[in-house]
Length: 620
Image 1: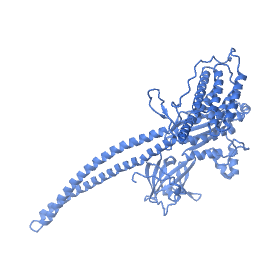
Image 2 (image 1 turned 60 degrees about the vertical axis):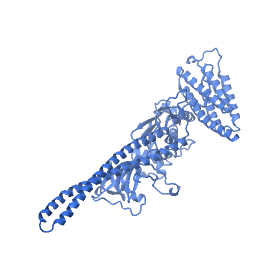
Image 3 (image 1 turned 90 degrees about the vertical axis):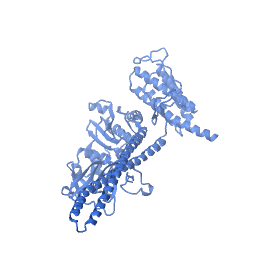
Image 4 (image 1 turned 180 degrees about the horizontal axis):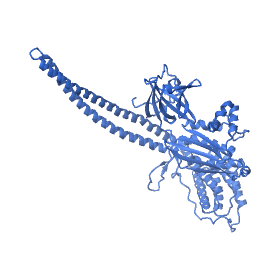
């Protein structure tokens, strides 16, 4: 019985932690907005909102017997109530204390925080909040503030029952339910992942069904061709028959005429059989096409539905950034405003998780290297408060564009080249040939930094290298643009989802391969006379630039690979691009575009180079 109770308590605590995290994020976001906002009706609304969040969190903590969190939330409630009633004036120190309390409650949520140190942390925080309440409160009869409007009187709601959850980040939207039921339910990401894998398996069935309809279509075409050939033979045989009749009189030609007549009868009977078979195959083909359309619609609908379950808005990630920017800017002695647009756009949860670190690295760079301190900005006739703009937009081809731009000092290209030169990444001779974009792209190389000192925030030249590596691993690209004293812009393009894998199907050395479509810029046929050798490398001309040509069979280490030229002296190649880099791979044949389900090769074949996995085509 004890084990059952322990398991039940663990489940309750797990549910509470998810709920509590949402409440804490809502309170922290409300405090940040309150800190920046002038007095007014909206201010009273935000105070009411954070008051309710603290109240709900206190009730939820009481339900799972976490008395330390309950006591801190009770003290927070008192502060918010005093702010709401105008008995307490907000200040920078008060906001700092409240944010510190939010951090402490987050620590108490962890296993370590709920251990022996939990009661001490809770008691110290409660005491500090109460001291702030006593030290900063005004007399009850005094005016609230010259700028503050009278508070709106409302009643705090009762604690939210654990059975009625607020909308979760991983919640599944359901139609409105009767009897006041919640419109969302909590589903573990592991379960969603399992459903996604099962839905993806149906893709193979869909491809096989499509292949069966194609096979039937080919059989029907073959039968039609055979029927035409036999129809063409019959008039010839009739002519031969008539000739035999004329020339066979009196010289024993009757036997030949009889054999020919039997042959004609056989052909007519076979034609009837072919016609019947053709009709049946036509009916089967139509039925198979109908079944394929129905199956394809179901599979595509199910895949899309599961993908939507795995989609989350950027808001889930960006809600931590305002406070992150605020704290880091204050440590640097800078004033920075963060503006976010398009955070309602949804993207695959797995991509969202992977984008967290790259965005944090970029924001750190903007704060530490980009935006100047207020005194320096005034000297440059710029506003003392710097700005970082984050904009998200959905693009064609299942891509999402993320732009992070600051209005700081920009990147010194000369310093980038000097750092790259010290690392041996760019010689003085090559540096003169590099354009501004190519020179700026060196900032993504490991070890390249424009900072003369190493701090605990940046300076080692690793941050942007990690950013590029992570984004390219997701199948995305990143570009940088910078202007002196006008700021720097990072432009990232990432896929909307990881569930779909489309590629270009090619044949090399008698085997089939799929090249990821996201990296293929185009496929071309190049005449042998248009191939050039540059610096001992074969190249082809693409977009006015020489692009290195490599044989894909050599890269994949296929035995006896030739990739011979075609009869007309031309070759087929797929041109791949990643950022500013381009390369062309020569193949034997380009067979078309294909959607496939890729599976990893397993640990036994983990050392196989340049192959991401295996897939099964509709042909088997």
